[in-house]
Length: 357
Image (spheres, rainbow, N blue to C red):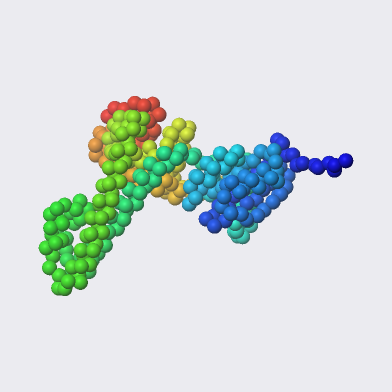
C-alpha cells in the first residue's frame, strides 16, 4: 500500500505580498491574515515570484504592491498577467511608523508595504496603458530637452558676461533670431580658444533645438489619431492660453480625467493646492504644495499668464484677485480656473466658449 501524500491546498486563502523593488534584487515579505510567513530577497523577476507563490501557497489568492519609481509599470502589468492582484503605490501614501523612519532598510520597507496592504490602507495609483505611457515619455523627453536648451542659453550668457561682452538685446537669446546668430559669429575674441568655446556652446544649442523640433513633429504626428485629435485640437486647445504642448502634456499625464471625482483632486495631482500644517487647534497654510506633477504645474502656470492677456474673463478675474493677494498667489488661482476649464471641456467633449467662466 503506497503512503498517502498530503498536498498543500490554500484555496481561497488570501496572501499579501510587499515588494521593495530595486534594479539588482527585490526584497519580498509575505503575510496572511494573522502573521508574517516569509521574508526573503530574490531576483527582479515577476515569473520567479509567481512560481514561488504557486509552489508554496497553491490555490491561494495573491495581492501585492510596490512603490512607484524608476521601474515604471512593466512589473505591475506582468504580475497582473500572472494572476497576482497588484497595485502600484505612491511612496508618500504608505503609512510609516516612527521606528521605520529611523531604521530604514529594504526588508523593513517590504514588510511595511505588505502590512499596510493587509490593513487596507493602500490605494493604487492610476496606471496608463502602454501606448499612452510611451506618448507620455515622448512628451517628457521634449520637456527635458527644452530644459537642457535653456541651460545651454544660460551658459552662453555667462560665457559672454565673463568676457565682458554685453548682448545688445537680451531677449534675442531666448528667441534666438538669425540676427542674434550672426552677431555671435561677428564677435572678435582675443584668441581662438575663446571662439572655440563659444562655438561649442552654439553647436550644443543647435543640436538640442533640432532634437526638440524632431520630437515636436513626432508628437504632432501621433496626435493626428482620431480620438486624440478630437480631445487635443477640438476641445483642449479651444481654451485661450492652451497651446499644443500643454494640451498633449495634459492628455498624456492625466489619461482619463474621470478618475478625479472632483476638481480639488485633480488640482492636488497637478500641485495647485496649498500646503497645510496643523498642530492642535492651529492650522497654517504654507504656500503651494511641494507634491506635484512637475510637468503639468509648470505648464499650467505659464499658460495662466497667457490666459489673463488673451481671455477677458480671466483678465478681469486676475485683476480682482490682485486687489487682495500677491500677483503670484493670484496667478495660482487663475491656473486652477484654467484647470477647471480643461477638465470641463475634456469630460463633456465640448469646445470652450470665450468669456464664459
